Length: 346
Image (cartoon, rainbow, N blue to C red):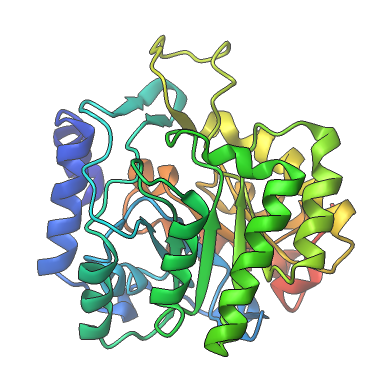
């Protein structure tokens, strides 16, 4: 069905098509059994105290305001991450702000954390009968006077409903946000967030989402700070401001580039971080995943879990099922019993 509808959807403005997809999911939920695959137990993995039916997750950015996350979980994903959520509702950057690069199987976005705000989103979550792992990605409002304080508000507000909370310091579309990659600022932020956790007596896992545009000599410091501040996993990576020179589409817009052009960049980052982390913190790999092959490459590079977004846009709602099915074939062909046995073996 998606292959029939895709040409029509891709004639629409990308944001209009996205809003239509969210509405369709909300009102036409598909039964989860349609997206089960045989021998899926080979993909089961447990990380930071959570059981994941499979390692294929949907990244933050698709369901920013928790409008359809339960329906998305029904599509066969092992987990879904909503957001980025800010304390107050915000419109984001002026439109147009999403651009398809069809020849590159990529997107450029400069959305700017458009979302309905913490209170509305938490009410939606509490109304749902959640049956899977839900991550909540938090960030600061664009007009805030204190970005660190906004992160604290997000943690304080969502710790009791999230399976994990992602600290998003890596979007290229919010001014000064990426400054938190600086060693001292990162230490201060994570130390403060851990104080909030202690005050609330919560053990909710904190994940850190990192930019692909940091320099290689910064990786060791970021990894060390994450380890020392009890980060439960690192998400590698967000979108990139770079890598425009080899694009086929000829679209030159500001914003974060995602999809196929990010594949090698993020895989390289995973390999470098995997070495530095030395199995002390797991990695969630993101960037250009749209098949079992690209998923497998991320896992053997060092990723324990995976997330996709642009691949979902281009391949449609069966993408998780297809990747799961083909990953299981790869494991069987190699005589491997469980996905966790190949992490970092590349």
